[in-house]
Length: 280
Image (cartoon, rainbow, N blue to C red):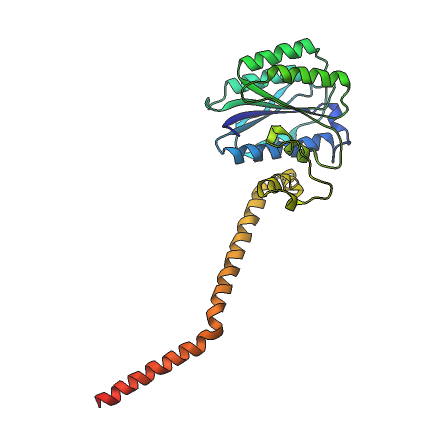
């Protein structure tokens, strides 16, 4: 992934209370925000992520662009579920935030979560999409919840018209046994190819990088804001393994070493004694 400034728009409208995603639609989005932030920072530490909400009385920027996940998490915890979704207004506010980003070398991207009905008509959405494309803003849409054919058609038209050089994607994620964040990692939005793991397949079914990104334990750690704790545990594990390795190496000469050393020591004393006798 390139150097980017990414504004994430979460849907905190009333439909986000629904429990058809584990544990709720709102909490599922919070998990996914952590996964997105982690992926962006791994791809380029100089990238930055901002946060907005689209529900309530109108869109609101919760956090300007930052590399600190704790800031985003704090704002998510303070966000209240209420009101209706304001999709087009949120995208326009996100664009203004991107336009005034401090690091102009960062490419502009918006990731929108939506699980509520879309009141805007297709013509309005297409017009907005073309404006975003003209201003080099890539937009990924994560649609989940009860999507009727009309909503799906609107979102498809929007993403099709906003596509540019850096790519824009639409991920439609229906309820299922996996977490929303797990399904998101399999989409092109986070570099996946859309291939889901076989039922019951664990981390061994993937390569190293895929295992790290698709491990449910990682998503769980992100949900509990323990990414730093996880890194600390990893360092401790490596240090412990290094100590055990060194201890194992130290035990190898001890098996035959003492007799040899004692023998050498005896010979040295004998030689010294011989030298003294010769001298005498």
